[in-house]
Amino acid sequence: HGVGKGVFAEALAALLFCQSPVSGAACGRCKGCALWRAESHPDFFRLSPEVDAKSGKVARVIKVDQARALTEFLGKSAQMGGWRVAVIEPADTLNTASANSLLKTLEEPGARTLLLLLTDQPLALLPTLRSRCQHFVVTPPEAAVARAWLAPRLSDPGAASLLLSLCRDAPLAAEQLAVTEGFRKRAEL
Image (cartoon, rainbow, N blue to C red; front, side, top):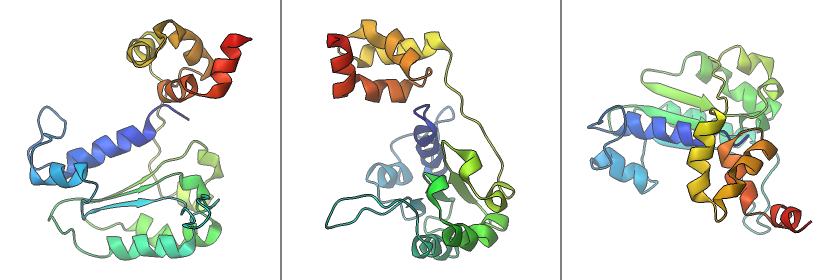
């Protein structure tokens, strides 16, 4: 948790949608980049637990109807003529029915289609899903690199080492922890 899997997935999607990449990154100026920045790229699909409109609560699972909507989306041609990218996060919230509805899509995703299943708990994914995926472990950066990235983002840069040690060197988790009431109370204690 907090090592940047989601940030990586979004950077990869932006790169794949970019029409004029520069040095291995999205240019930020083309039509694909403009659509990505506006969060309206027609070839991107994010699948995550729904938020109840009335209560504001996040569902505990990704439901089968959501997974079917993804399958339907991926069954169509890319509108921009390039890649289609789907991010499923957290993938371990797929219930049995929704996971099973994605099996054929994972086996045969179609040309220029990328499905990224992000999870902090890979063993919580059904074995049938895991067997159809390539596995990449995103580890925390070296402590010095994480500290150099985190310190300028904090109101107290000297707390970077402590925050990182509390978060097992996961920089994004440390950045989130820094603004919690619990961390402020810890300092008082």
